[in-house]
Length: 199
Image (cartoon, rainbow, N blue to C red):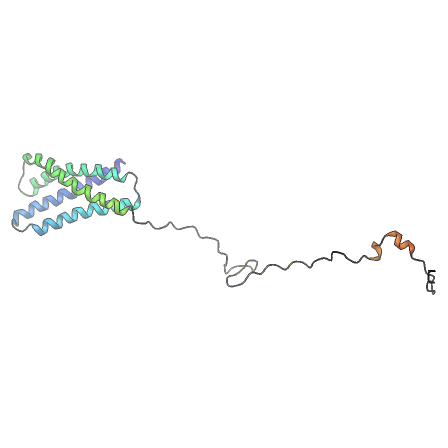
């Protein structure tokens, strides 16, 4: 959490201070031609905050809303200080007297230029679908290296034929006949046919 808002706040402060210093330098040499360069600079500042926050929303960074809110406040104050230093060094030797205005109105304007596009970027980025993570490769059912035991694609699986039904009343063999039936049969004599039974 600390690294999130601190990094964003300091980076945005440097970007804003550099942009305002360039605008001040441009106004020295082109006092009547500032509309285009001012609009382009504001568009860049808004775009940086919106794009970065949209990436945070898309990545679902934890506490991203709070981080960007604090980062906007930090960027406003720090960019005011850096702007006064940059203008004093590169433009017109501005003194400490400009620090009050930079830390009030200038800081508030810079904070809004970070906070508003950041809120929009978080809103849009949070609604962009992330790509689904790659699932591990599923076991192929129709692999070319199949050994023939499994089914292959394009072939219809038929159920295995059921074994032939066993007769429910099998014909008993002579061995399985009851002993009483075997006792009723008359023994035969070699070379003779059995005489018919009297009726």
